Length: 234
Ligand code: CA
Image (cartoon, rainbow, N blue to C red; front, side, top):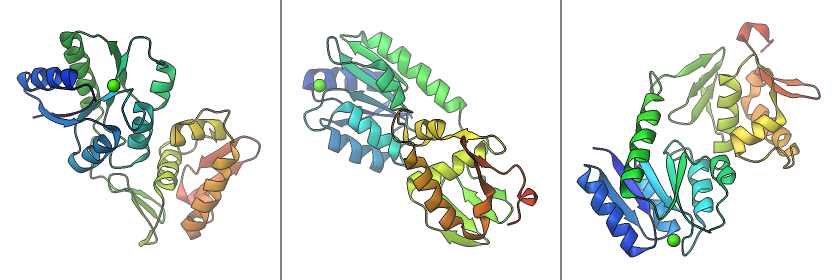
């Protein structure tokens, strides 16, 4: 049974949604504010989150940002609920990593179709072998557990450093510009300070120790993960 978390402060709408979702066979979790929504998402790992944009405590955008910044919740698809006339910025929503949005008042039927479509899409993305551990020379990465080892010794990475490492690894042998990394790792617009990237790469390399040279600096452009561990003198 698919589990859906509804973060919505309007009681009537919350009830209508819960009723209809349960009727469709979904398990429904409910939160009336952003902080409760965040803690419920972390504790219960729903398959999808319906997220109202205007909440009494946190903004929906803030909730979305936090969900996407946390390794345990970032893969949960978010469908944003926005009211007509609200400061709805779809670009912002998508930049924050929301899958889709609907504008109130919406028909329940339309919403259910969107939910089905998202669940189909995100299930299709399920990694072929979720337990797969990535091995590259002296480096081991467990993408599910957010853990990494150098020569068998676990290294302690922050979630940003881990995402940075994983993304560079997944795109190895291809140069990643600082702007692209900012967008894909931090979810920030490219015009934000790109020095942030350099600072984090520096810290990540320090932690990588003997494997730091797996990440090469491409002068004036960005960074590149080596194509083959034999290619670098690590
Ligand atoms: Ca609201």
